[in-house]
Image 1: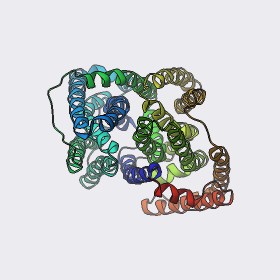
Image 2: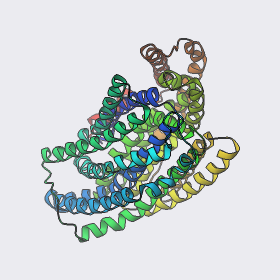
Image 3: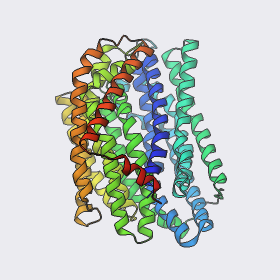
Length: 522
């Protein structure tokens, strides 16, 4: 089983991308802070991102990867590549139509997620942030086309066990945005102009990412090319599997849009939630998304070969690895959120008051981090069996809870109630998926998983208690100076890592021999 090795490759490259993303966000916080212009930019960027997750990374890949893997297994690589061409043509027509529709109706369609922006005017620019959001969104919307194509070719590469390039291409987005922000600092641009250049950098990065994965496919021997869109039997099957997945992803993403729209009713709240979201996305991207990307083709191959026992073992090890990496991150984000936010972002336009607000949201997201990661692991167990309907049903239940609870909490305890509702809904979704897998015996926790997860949780608790004791002292050394603050954060995180590793070793929560064995298995 190469699951750990594949996850390590994807996770390390994703970690690099997320670190660069963190640098990007630090610079955005420095220049835009959390106000009406930042709310406008984040709202504009959310629109193509949401549809990217729906059409490219979500529904499409969930349906495409198992079918592509089956074609390779049953008919050979040439037939699989022909199917990929057919799928690419269908996806391009669909996504291009959506982009054109949104470009023509942007002043009206953006009101869905930017409701609160239309009620305020930025005193610095004299322009409605809603107007800025519309223009920014029109610049970034073509990004959806390029990223949809990138997701398709990445799925091809992943199915053929070429994980590195597909995991590395998101780095391009961060490089483009960081370059734009450095230029902004040198030229002393206004916040409004920074937003324009960031939007342009996003779209240009999409073109480069698409070019890189196409080049990677050709290097891997995959014959890529554009075909006339046709409703072939393969495309029909893709649609049958993809529609439930699209609805499932759509429910989740529209749910996020509703939460964002509610947040725009309070000045700065959309930005506070976005900064918190970006920070918890660091471990989620490195662990959950990386694990999910590696797990889907691995499970698909096991099931195609009729190896049900191997598929169950793969799922057990995926959950174990995820717990070992996720639980300490969740504990740390919940215990020291203000220290982390202050050290990362508190300088320039990002004030101490903003730090306090973002920390509230981050703690709420931390409660749901294990659930967010588990969703990335449990969902492929259904997708690999070409079952996209079940996750859709549970996603609908989760979305209903998220929206109703989020609205109630927003008006009762404040904006961070939206983050808490997201975490609660994620746990409900995990419980539903896990219960069904257990009921149908598609997932049977083995003795090793039963033994190690409690030990991992205990080791994480020891680390969190230690951090809670030492962080108040270390907070005094945060000065707002970029280099010094990152050094203090590095020392704190390093101490947490050492404490967790020592506690995990003493409790036998994990053994190095497990890693060596996993890397040696074929």
